[in-house]
Length: 81
Image 1 (cartoon, rainbow, N blue to C red):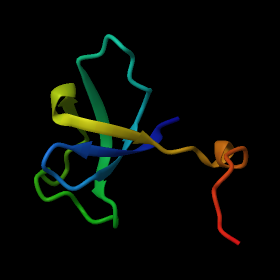
Image 2 (cartoon, rainbow, N blue to C red):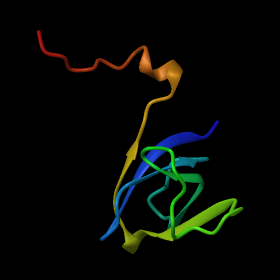
Image 3 (cartoon, rainbow, N blue to C red):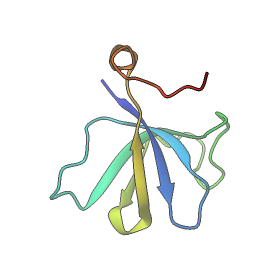
Image 4 (cartoon, rainbow, N blue to C red):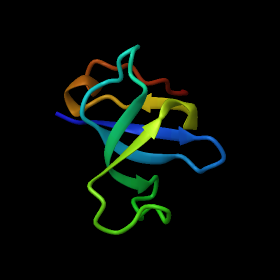
């Protein structure tokens, strides 16, 4: 099951994508699908109809892996009272 990630690329706004498997230490790149902006709109530099995008690690500043719906029940969110 794909995980939703927020991908932070150098010099670009963050984008949301689906990642089939978590990256391993020996990987040179990551392959993501269903790229979109954080508001759900299409990413302007990706052509229409593209199924997957491969990014080399040197382009990625950091990657946020979001919890799935099943995992969310066990995640404790911070809140203010």
